[in-house]
Image 1 (cartoon, rainbow, N blue to C red):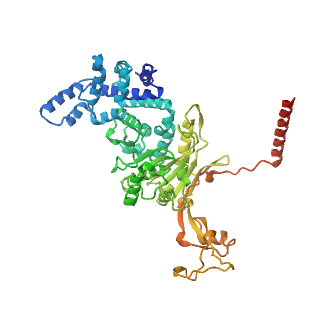
Image 2: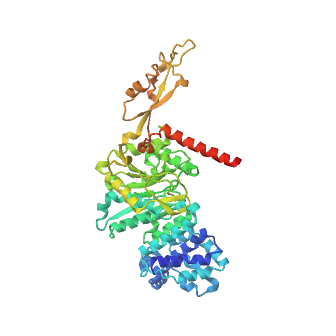
Image 3: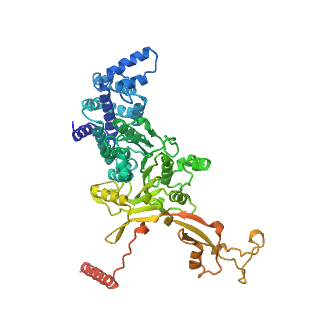
Length: 580
């Protein structure tokens, strides 16, 4: 059965569900049953041998698990004498037998069905008198690996995931990243390593701390397979949403990955892979989501562990936790001496500039830039994601920059690289075409400044260009006669007392001498002013849009007057028409 026919066949189960289930609920039934039937077929050839081995090991009072896995030739097995076709032979007890069959799987597989909340779906189908019909439909689908390879099955499963995401637009954006955005990120991640990744037998690790349904992991795997069929990408991830976690884990299982590498839970408060470090990482964390629920755990790690923990550089404001995910990724980078790491993360505009000098956000940017970790930031078009139309940015971060990139950051404005979708999905109205992805990838790979039709597209800056010092400018307090008030005690004795009402601050670029700036910009207007050096702070911001702004001269006044005159005349004519 070909992939389109297979997915159409599986999708046809929706016809059985229509009326008893909402469209947005179809996936809750079809996805776990697809996984169950695939595993059913994968284990069919070794079923008898596994059951025979189970009897032998039980008689010898030995833990049977490792022996059974060896017999099954998989990372999982099933100890139930049942399979889907045998279930159909006892029509009156399908629900009980189906539960018993699922319980026969290895713990890692049972975990998938538990997070799918499969028991609830069995109950709903049973009450609707649909359980036998649905089970029969799947039992007749031939998903044996001899007929459908892991790669083909993965594509089928991903197509189903996408279909269900489209039917549930209000939640799709939380757990589903547009495929073309993932392709772009994977390209940017791998483009500088293509030669290395083509070597025979190469093995690399990839991690997504906000794995969703596993789209980023899957696309990265496909990309590497195209580059080098002999390469192996070992995938790791963590996901908070139970159903998305189940889908991701099932997708990895179907593709032959070790599902023990996929963890459930909140990545920020309970890191499921605390000792692991990775070659590559990808993430699309939720935009602008507060982290108040986990504030106690995060602050405790920040205060007690400092830079030995994940959040040493600083903490962003509680209203937006996206930079916490970036810090988490930094902590997961493979050390340079072990080969280093590069990662891509999608963020909204806030992490670029929110927070003044000394704030948590600024300190995080400072850590990134002063340690020369940011390779590039790519501005995407608006209306690219399912649940928001805001501007978004892909950050490429790495600790093994090529020599040409050292000490520099590339900004790419790809906001004009899009095509209109045939059909909008939630807030998503635009998409990247293949030509757009290739163009952005070339711009990144070339690492050059590029201007097209007078408009800058790619710009390169030294890290220090984004830094500044916030200086506090003081002026003296004066008495009623206008005389400067002098301090009477301590260090301030004999020195002018600062007038808090006249206090001001100035941001001086790191690339400029503070005293020269002060003499030029402040003293001509306030000759009695001075800088309080104790209050000087270093800050960093990346004013992305400012670097791509192109000044457009205003239209001639005569043209504006002519247009206004024409509008006024039309309004007068309309009023006259109404009065007749």
